Image (cartoon, rainbow, N blue to C red; front, side, top):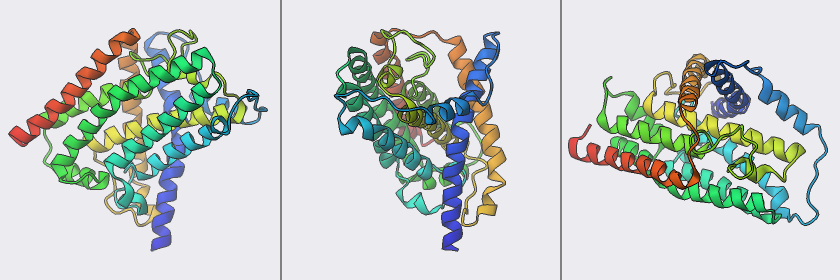
Amino acid sequence: MIGSAYLSQLLQVALALALAPLLVGWINKCRAWLSNRSAPSLFLPYRTIRKLFVKDAVVAHNASPLFRLTPYVVFGAMACAAAIVPSLATDLPFARAADAIALVGLFALARVFMSLAAMDIGTAFGSLGARRDMFIGFLAEPALLMVLFTASLISGSTSLPEIVDTIGHREFGIYPSLAFAGVAFTMVSLAENARIPIDNPATHLELTMIHEAMLLEYSARHLALLEWAAALKLFNYSCIGLALFFPFGIVVSGGSATLLLPALPILIVKLAVGGAFLAFIETLSAKMRIFRAPEFLGTAFMLAVLAMLVHLLLGS
């Protein structure tokens, strides 16, 4: 029984690793369709990662061991986050570690290592991107914590599986606190994943890049791991949002791998709808200037605080 539970846990992580690039490809395809452009292949992210893995890495002569270690740390942190987010089931072996604060800590760990590595070489654009990324994180992480605290007030626990179980068993309806929290979470997700209007993942203009500027010195397998980790982060944020605000289809008992099979198509459908919605938002939005990011994320923080106050005052 224990072996079957760990097999289910391994299956969830493997599915996250496999589906993350597909989600990025789906979003890019939807953006192209909405912009009336020729859509790239759905499997283009897989081909890009495979192509990078077979190339020879070129590392600056003054790079420290931190620079070489960072891709593995960032990828490992995102894989650990994928293991504790209840995307398919709520009682998997790593569920005991699925604390909301620990999850935010994993995202922060990856951000710190990525920023330090970007400044390690000493290039102007890498340092610029690192400072901007830390600036965005300084504003986005408190808003994310407020969203998770609002959900934890509903369940009385910061454990993600308990939060999902509690919200999933509530009567169907529109709850004002979750509505405000959902809008705030969407805004934070756009900022944390370098999406429009905060950043443009397809840009090649160094003066406006944030996330891409930190990757300029990486190549080959190191760049492949970081690109894969970025896709995993987007997948994790999508699964967190689906688990908190649309928890239907998540298996309560994940002790057997066969029990997870009915939840898989439901997760894929929800990710497809969520990816299309994200592409729709990005198509309607324009990239804002960096000095307007505090207004955007400040609004997200106020909505998250409002969600918490609505729940405390109205209990809904």
